[in-house]
Image (tube, rainbow, N blue to C red):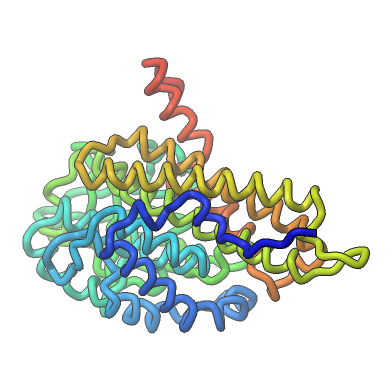
Length: 392
């Protein structure tokens, strides 16, 4: 029987040769941080549905990971590809950790960075970059997820002030946030508002009984006559295009991040199959096992090549939203398939938190849905290639 030294799955695709020195260094730094800080405790955090989010935010800020692809205000100003690689390593530890970083940087910080006033930027971005201040992004509502244009949250003028009323749902970081970017209907269309969470009438009860993203803070936002000065409105955002552009930023991180979860599942499963003895030989030596591992390796590598291609397009200023949808649809869907297939190889061990596979699989069920469901991305792609909108 011939035995060869095993090759890590992504090494078959020569991925390292496609990265520059800075990108590899950022990836490796984030991987070491996750190995040292996240992996020893993540199973316990997931089981207990608790996360030391504020503590971790400051650590992630000290590494330069919060708003890392933004320029100025204490942000690292890295490439989009480097940001994607960081998301991959964070999600290889847990989707909840990547969500903490994504919502902070690609939703809350990005909204303020792109659409906010100078006062908004100076007040919030430096503190958010260090993790001293945490942000959340209020778009989704209990009855309006895939159709955010139907939101019922209203902002009405009262003299020189705005008064906000409404409810947002499934908001990552909501209960621990210092500032919320909230989108609301006005007489002039959808507008965004910078809402300090200590404002009277604002509350953010945490959502419990989740079976997915348990190591993540998920909340409802309740706005009950929240009075804000006129300056609270984001001056650069007009209509639904504002929040949707923020979602595209977050989706880009998911293109890479989901592959991190898949890679962790696959690497765990390969190591398990090599050590597990079945009928007096390793599980990895069976043809059925190798067929599964080969197919998963192929899909992981294809997804990685797609992610890197989209990263280069984004760094060159040539990416479009439809291309981000291609990446999000394919990579999350394939990552979830990989997690489920890995579970079959681990057998009963695959359902325990001793191994990360069921945790990743449960998390990916949420990743499949948030920042646009698979069906929404199918319709975005379908509209792009047919020229026909199927949304209405």
